[in-house]
Every structure is written in structure tokens, then in C-alpha cells.
Length: 301
Image (cartoon, rainbow, N blue to C red; front, side, top):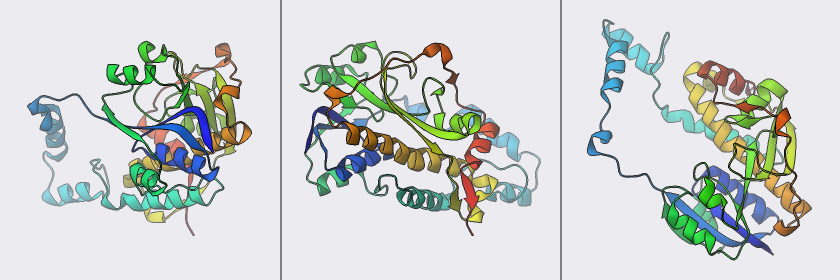
């Protein structure tokens, strides 16, 4: 069954895969699928090389310490560590993805590309490259669309020109608005409200201030991961796993609930927010971030 007047702005992001899984589970197919690749403005050649500030920072961290201590720092053994990618961090993503897929949320094929999933289900899509959804070429494309609602995945903070078209952009935000607006909503929800919240709304020029269609709350889960991955050197990987895997599944669950209740976007009844009662949050300091992230994880037995 087609979702009439509905555009899915697909991308390579895990959230796009999760939304696709939710729609496929309900046997609902967007009337139009636009796959967007986002490209950066070309940088000067010097940008390909480490900055002087970066080099000085590394030099300071290694100055006047023994070769043994240098190796210990790089390996994350005792004391201060340099933040470098952990090659086995992928295992955290796998464990979190498995947990999400076994929790009653939409079952998502996170480790297959969005385009492969689209092709596997014989879904026709258009493919474009933009710097963001504020790109004049995207605005020109969307202005000519016959559909009236588009499901936003990524593409930057939307500005007035694209929001002034006839198309309304549905965004599913981690946090119950207006109480949790802004960055890292899932973390602030867990820290401040002791719950995980999600809100579906139509975007406007404000930060998460659009008219709300649906909200949903969940208890803060206890995601079991190997004890090895609960150590400080995997803090960044735990955060990314939470945002890009579990968070994506929660967003998809809200989309699934919305489409179950009413699969016709023209029949949705958005309500304005009482912004006097709301709060805008910003990305937390790493120590606060890690404290919030750790509320979601327990050591597997």
C-alpha cells in the first residue's frame, strides 16, 4: 500500500534504514523515495593535512615521557589516553543492534546499506547529491513535488527557503518536546526525566519547536554489553552505538506507531507546542555525556 502524498528522504544513515524497516513491516511504501547523498564543499588542499594545533596537542601529550609510557597511552593502559578509533568497537554496535532488534522495536538490518535494502525490495528511488537540504537545487526539486509531506532523516538545520515550500518536513526527535529540545535529547531525557522520549513533529524555523503529531516514552533500557566494552576507552563507541543504533530504532518505533494510527499524512492532526514550559538543551560536556550513556548499559553476564 502506498503512503499517499509522502516522500521518504532516504540516505545512508542508520535512521533511514530504521524508518524503512518500520514502513516495510507495515507493508507501507512511500509514494516517492528520494535518496540523498551529502557532499562537502571542496576544502583547500591544506585541509587534508593535520592542523598545527593538532600536531602541537599530540606533541604536548608525548613530551618528556618514556617510550613505555607512550605505548601505554596509545593502548589505553592506565592514565590519560589519546582518543583514537578502537578497531573492535564494531562489536559494541553489533551488541546494541541485536538488543534493539530483540526489544519489540522495528527489526532493522543495520549492517546492510540503505540502497541495498531498497533494491532488495524492488523499491524505485531517485538519487541526488546535495551539500544539504538547504541546497538551492534540492529546494528547486522539492518545490515541484506533487507530495505534501517529506520524512526528514538528515541534511542540516532547515532554513527558511526550504521550509517555505509547500512541503512539510516530518522529524522524529529524541526527547519529548517542548520539555527536551535541542541536542542529545535521548541523553538529557535519561538524566533529567529518567525516561527515553521521542516526538514526531513538523519542522519549522525554531529548534524543535514545530507542531507535534505524536509523542512516546519508554523506560531507560539496560543494554547488556561485554564487560570489556564498559571500560573508559570505549566511551565514544558506547555513545555512538546508543545514538546511531538504539536511538534509530526508537525513532522508527514512533514512525511505526504514527503510521499504524493513521497512514494518511493528510489526516494527521498536529498540535502547537507550549514553548513557555519547554527547555532547550545543548550537547553535554563529555563527563556528563558519559554519565548519561552509562545509564543505558549493564555488563552482560
